[in-house]
Amino acid sequence: MDVWLKLLFSCVVVFIVNDRPAVCGGKAMEPLEMMVDDAENQCPNLSGSEGACPGNMEGDAWQMVQKKGNQFVVNDQPFYVNGFNTYWLMVFAADESTRGKVSEVFQQASAVGLTVCRTWAFNDGQWRALQKSPSVYDEDVFKALDFVVSEAKKYKIRLILSLTNNWEAYGGKTQYVKWGKAAGLNLTSDDEFFSHPTLKSYYKAHVKTVLNRVNTFTNITYKEDPSIFAWELMNEPRCTLDPSGDTLQAWIEEMAVYVKSIDPKHLVEIGLEGFYGLSTPNRVQYNPNTYAQQVGTDFIRNHLILGIDFASVHIYPDSWIAKSISDVHLQFTKSWMESHIEDAEKYLGMPVLFAEFGVSANDPGYNSSYRDTLFSMVYKTLLNSTKKGGGGGGSLLWQLFPEGTDYMDDGYAVVLSKSPSTSNIISLHSTRLAIFNSVCSWKCHWGCKKKHVLDTFMYHDDL
Ligand SMILES: *[C@@H]1O[C@H](CO)[C@@H](O)[C@H](O)[C@H]1NC(C)=O
Ligand SMILES: *[C@@H]1O[C@H](CO)[C@@H](O)[C@H](O)[C@H]1NC(C)=O
Ligand SMILES: *[C@@H]1O[C@H](CO)[C@@H](O)[C@H](O)[C@H]1NC(C)=O
Ligand SMILES: *[C@@H]1O[C@H](CO)[C@@H](O)[C@H](O)[C@H]1NC(C)=O
Ligand SMILES: *[C@@H]1O[C@H](CO)[C@@H](O)[C@H](O)[C@H]1NC(C)=O
Image: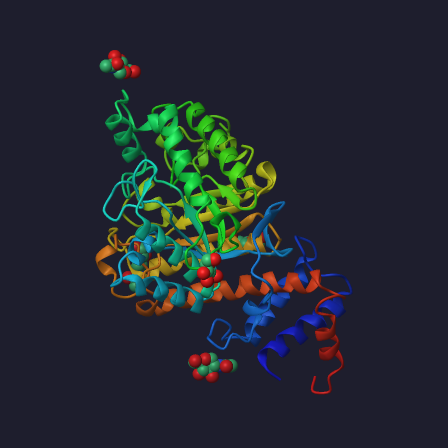
C-alpha cells in the first residue's frame, strides 16, 4: 500500500470513528488535528518529487483563487498558503543570460511545496523599465513578465503581482512624481502621488495596461489568468504627508474600485505593512513603535474599503524595533500575527496574508538557527489558526533566491540548497497545509466526485 493509500485510509478511519463530517471551514477540529499529525507520520517525504501525497490531491483544473469568509478557496476547497517573495523575476527574465534563474527559483520553491509567489509587475523608468515613461512600455520587458506568469503555472505556483512601489526601488511613487514634474506639474512631495489627478491617471493607465495584457506565451489575458492569485495596489504604501490617513484612504478607495472595474475576477489587496492607525486607538499598542501610527496608514480602516478582498501584513522587527536580534523580536512577531489574525476574523471578515517576513543575515546577533526559530514561530502561529479554519490565510517568506544570485542579496535571501534546516521547516509547513487543504476537499466531495475512491479503499482486501 503506498503512502497515499495509507494516508487516506487513516483519515477515513478518523471520519468513521467520529461519525460526523470533517472540516470545511472551521468545525470538528480534534479529528483534523489527529489527521494532520497522523498523516505526517505516514508521509515523511510528502514534499519529495514523487508527489504521492496530499499536496497533489487537488489535481483539478487550474482555477481562480477566491475568498469565502475568512478563507482563500480554490474550486470550493480551502487554499491556505505557504509561499515566498522573489521580487526581481521580470527583470531577470528580460535577459537571456539570467532567464533560467526564474525557472530555477520556481522549481526549487515547488520542491518544498510553496504554492504562491509575490513579485513586481512594475519597473518604472529605471534600468530594464517595464514602463519607460507614462503609458510607454518596453515590449521586451513585458514579454519577460509574460514569461514569468506562464512559467509559474508550469510549477503550479500562483503569483501576487504588485503594481508599484512606495519606495524608490524600481521607480515607484518617486518616479511618478518625477514624470509629473517633467510634464510641468508643481509637485513638492512624493506623497502627492496619492492625490494629484494627473499622477493618479498615470497609475490607472498602468493598471489598465497590465490587467488587459495578453500573455504572448499563453494568449491568456492577465485579468483572465488563474495563475495570478491577486493584484496588489502598491508595495508598502505610506503617506506621511497626511498622518490623518484620509489621503491614502481615498486613494485606496479609488484604486480598488478601479482595479475591480477592469478585473472583477481576481482578488485585490493593498500591500500594507499592517500598522494600526487612528481608527483603532485600542490596538496601536501592538504597533512596533509609536512612529508606525503616523505614516498615514490604518490597518483596519484601510481594509474595510470596498473592493479589498484580503489583508496583508509584513513582519520586520529588525527594521521596526532594533537591528540587533533578540527575543523581543520573536515576542513581537507572535503578538503582531495574533492580533492581525484576530482582526481578520472579528472585524474584517477576510483572510490575512503575512506577505513578507524574514530576517537579515546582516543583523547583529544573527545566526541561521535564529532564522529557523523565527520561521517556525511564524508557521506555528499560522497553523494554530489554520487548524481552526481561521483567518490566518498564509505567509510569504522574504525572500527566496536560487543559487548564483548572491549579488542581489540584501541579507534576507534564503537559498534552499544552502540551508537544509530552513528548507525542512518550510517543507514540513507546506505538507501540513497541503493536508489541511486536501482533507477539506475530501469532505467537500464526500459522496460525489471522490466517492468511488473511498469505496475502493474501504472495501479493498489489502487494507
Ligand atoms: C524518504 O526520503 C529519504 C531520502 O530521499 C529516503 O532515504 C527514505 O527511504 C524515504 N522514506 C520513505 C518512507 O519513503
Ligand atoms: C507650487 O505649490 C506650492 C504648494 O502647493 C506653492 O506654495 C507654490 O507657490 C507653487 N509654485 C508655483 C510656481 O505655482
Ligand atoms: C496564440 O494566438 C496566435 C494567433 O491567434 C496563434 O498563432 C498562437 O499559436 C497562439 N499561441 C498559443 C500558445 O495558444
Ligand atoms: C543564535 O542567535 C540567537 C539570537 O541571537 C542566540 O540566542 C543563540 O544562542 C545563537 N545560537 C548559536 C548556536 O549561536
Ligand atoms: C497554539 O495554540 C496552542 C493552544 O491554544 C498554544 O498552547 C500555543 O502556544 C500556540 N502556539 C503558537 C505558536 O501560537
